[in-house]
Image (cartoon, rainbow, N blue to C red; front, side, top):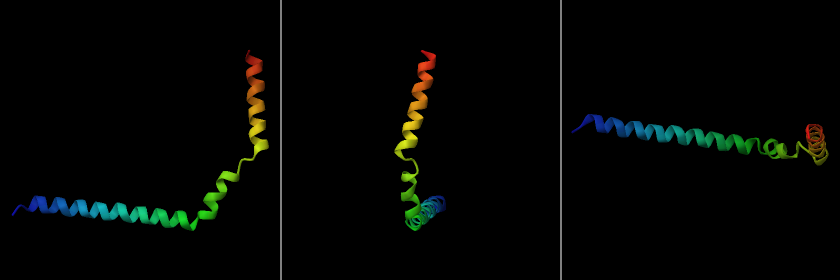
Amino acid sequence: MDIINEEAAQSSAELVLLFGGIIVIAIVAALFYKNYLSGLGNGINNTDLQNVNNKINNLSNKFS
């Protein structure tokens, strides 16, 4: 009977359970904050994006 191999298997099983628990907590948190996370994409509207593009184009015109 080799005690070292038995302890390594137990450590591996504990790590799998630990990472599994962390993943479950992250999924539950994402579901809990679903409305907040889905609203992040609406933060930038088209006019803001167009303003940034215009400013970048104006800068490139100054350097050419």
